[in-house]
Image 1 (tube, rainbow, N blue to C red):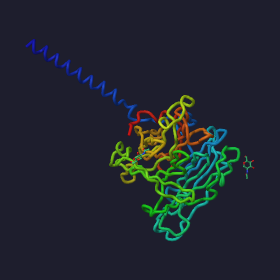
Image 2: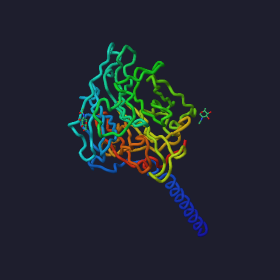
Image 3: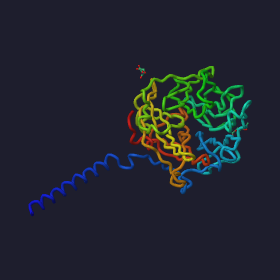
Image 4: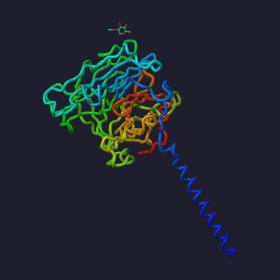
Length: 383
Ligand SMILES: *[C@@H]1O[C@H](CO)[C@@H](O)[C@H](O)[C@H]1NC(C)=O
Ligand SMILES: *[C@@H]1O[C@H](CO)[C@@H](O)[C@H](O)[C@H]1NC(C)=O
C-alpha cells in the first residue's frame, strides 16, 4: 500500500509538472498581447474617449497633414443615417483646438440624373471622402458620387486636387503640378461589377507606378490611372489564395481598406531606405454581418514596394479605444496618414513617425487616434 501510495504521489507530481509546463509554454507562445494590437492614442485631449472627437453626425473621417501643425479634415455628413442628401464637410483642424469652424466648407450635393429609383437611396453624393498626397506631393481628394452622364452606375469615383477647392496657400510646400484641376470622374474602361464603384483606396508604391487604387483584397484588384485619365485594371499576379485570406476566416468578408503608405522598417536616420526594408502598408477590415449587427475587425497588411507588389505580412487584429466606450459593435476604420507633413515624399515615413488613424462608431461618429508606426508592425505573420 505504501509503495503504491508513493507511486501515486509521484504520478500526481509528474502530471502536475506536465500540466504546468504546458500552461507556461502555451502562455509564452500566445500571450494576449501577441494576439491583438490595442490602439492607444499618444496625444489625447479627450481622455475619456481616448480619441479626438469630431462634429456630431459626421463619419468616415480622413485627414491631410499640413504645415505648422494644421490638418485638413474631410468628413461625411448626413442629417439622419442614410436619409440623404449626403455631403462632405471640409475644415482645417489643429490638435489643440480641434475644428476651426471659420474654415468649414460643404461640397455641393451631387444628384443622380435619370432613373434614381434603380439606385434606391444611394444615388446622391459626395460621400466617403479620402484625402491623400501623391508620391510627388499633390494633395488630392477622392470621393464617391453619382455619375454625370447616362450610365448604369449609381456611384463612381471622383477626384480633385485640393488646391483648386480649398485655400492651402502657406499650408503646403509642393511643386507638384495640378493634374486634377476640376472634379474628374475616374471611369473604368471595362464593365464594372455591380452598380457602385466604392471603397477604392489610394495605393501609391512609387513614382514609376503612377496613381493606383486598391479595390479588393480577397482577389487582389488594382486600378491604375493613365495619363489620359482612363482607368484600367493593373494585373498583379499573386498567390492563388491571397495572403490575407489565409489568416482571416473564410466566413468573413474583407471590406474596405485605408489608403496605403510606405514605411521604412527602421527609426528615422538609422538606415537608408531600400527594396528590402521598405514596405507598403494599409489597414484592411473583415466584416461580420448578422442582421443589423456588424463587426469590423481591422488588420495591418504589408506589401512589397516593388515588382509584383505581392503581400508581405499581416498583423494580429487591432482594437480601437472607442470600442471600450461604446461596446464592441460596428467600429470602423476609414483612413490613415502620417501625422506630420513629410514634405519630400508625404506618403513615406519611418517606424518612429506617428500616424493618424481615422474611424468611428456605426455611421454616426468620427474619431482619430495617433500612434507610432512601430506599434502597427508588431507580431506580423509572414505571407
Ligand atoms: C489664401 O490664404 C492666404 C494665406 O492665409 C491669404 O493670404 C490669401 O489671401 C488667401 N486667398 C484667398 C483667395 O482667399
Ligand atoms: C512577377 O510575377 C511573375 C508571374 O508570377 C513572376 O514570373 C515574376 O518573377 C514576378 N516578378 C517579381 C519581380 O516578383
